[in-house]
Length: 406
Image (cartoon, rainbow, N blue to C red; front, top):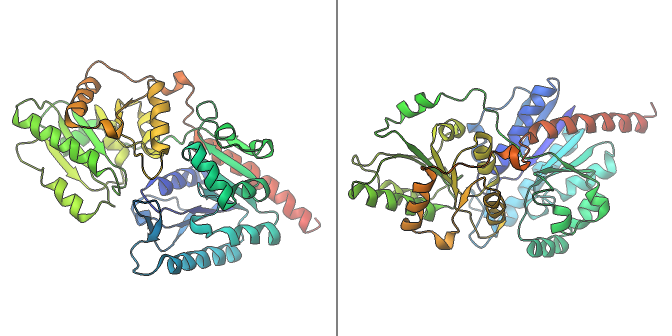
């Protein structure tokens, strides 16, 4: 079984982490499977990858505050880096000849960079299964429908993709209803569930806490994901604990993870809050984020898909401050999950030190989140996706034999 995974990775760490979670599960379930990952992530080297997986690094791209894409490290026009990426993807598809092409989130790829590869596989390698991995929530339904209509996504879902993996639950948020998908597309959807984390191999809580040289008995972990956004939340939090420390009211330690993609200017601003008088540790990145979250009494996070999956896996008390620009996907997710009692939420427009302090007090107090299984949250998404890929490979083999007259 040869699986090619496309993970565009323009902003944050979510796509690469989701793709690697699935790839790792596939390696466990199918030890003879070959996997090749196409990724634009600048952090792909930081994560542990299974022996049967190799990856090709695409030139990085990033997203501006207006939602438009631009080149990452290379000082070239976006059209140039886009053409480079498209050619690398196409030549990989042509030479690797995958049995399954698994596309994470972006049906067309960034700027349509996988369209040529999709059409090539559909016509020249009809046995290859084309699979779209759909995140639980894309964006506001009206905006999503307009964007998909304009860019031809609906036609791709109808005519090109064989299967759609939903990394979520249609009971919580149904893309068929919200985004106006046809019954034909709806039948292609496999609801895999959310991609929870493997908690085997976590470092013990006491080991993490000793490493942080904690001065109190409670730990709050604050994270902004990749760090490309979320600065306002981190600065508000640091301002809050600085004021509490000066007033002698700080009875918890803090670990603030700024993210490897935060600008140097913003990172320096946050570092200025570091003081020997504060029970505070700042780091920019750790590949073992789950161990730190597991050691926390309270987590403060943005509303990204992977952050939610980690919080739910550990059933942690959490305060979510979702991003609302350039998309409202995080806000929709946070509203859905806070309504179920899984997390607490602060809308960014309501974020200030006083409101945050009240939520931290409640989060460290008697409030407890509802266990995910009690509200029908399935966290076995990677297992479900892996098993579905195995079934699709069986179908692909039958088609290949038919093509070859066997």
